[in-house]
Length: 139
Image 1 (cartoon, rainbow, N blue to C red):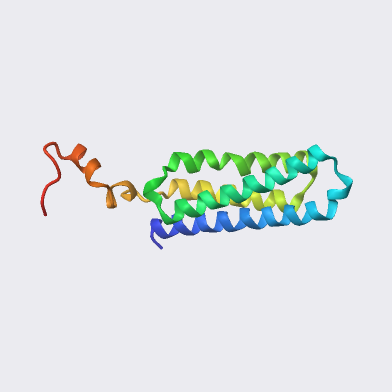
Image 2 (image 1 turned 90 degrees about the horizontal axis):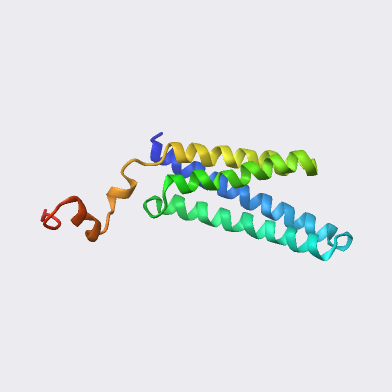
């Protein structure tokens, strides 16, 4: 399997896991919303929205690797990593924490196997002018 396929499947897998955890936490919210205060409900919904947005960014990065950098994915991997630590430490949520830890590991593997020519494969003409002083060369 090529590194491009590993990269893509790691990002798609991480996005699916994070989206699934968001749905899991949303289902838990619906079951426990009457026992929570207004602030706790707002934070819970905001965390679910954060997970959904992170999953969307990962799917975008898998589809268009030249539009986002590997450093961004590496930094975004800190979000589920810190969530895993917090869930294990404070909430004792084993299922959600474990899945977010797996998603963070997949994101780091994707950042390490980022396609080398992703930025150069379909570079716009304007950026080719920077590589070739005098303008892009005719084929």
